[in-house]
Length: 172
Image (tube, rainbow, N blue to C red; front, top):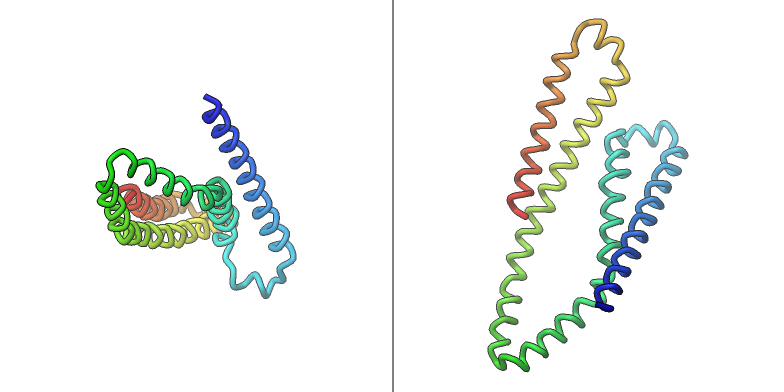
């Protein structure tokens, strides 16, 4: 009961730290974007800045949430292996061998996930850029009645994003 209460408290603290870190990253990106000259802004699209605000800041938050496991996990694994060895003896080595066998498989799975995330970010960047351009020229779009054409184009871009997300969901 006490261990559960402490674990919950730890999780809450890590979530708070993650949110603080995410906010700090978002503020730093915002302040830096305000200081950029127009020449420096030429190489960076607004979609990339939006991705920095959302995706990259979220990665920092997730890292902060699970950072403690970097230190605790090896101790927990060692203790668990010791206790399992006390219960089942040498059969524990089979389980340990299986853990090592899964390491390359996990590497392949995470490689596919990483590649899918990169493709998803590129696709999201395209869609965000189109939406920004669309919103900047909304009067022209309305004047010429191009709403349906742009609606279809944005739906197509979003459908491509969903294909990538579905692939990621099947891999996970």
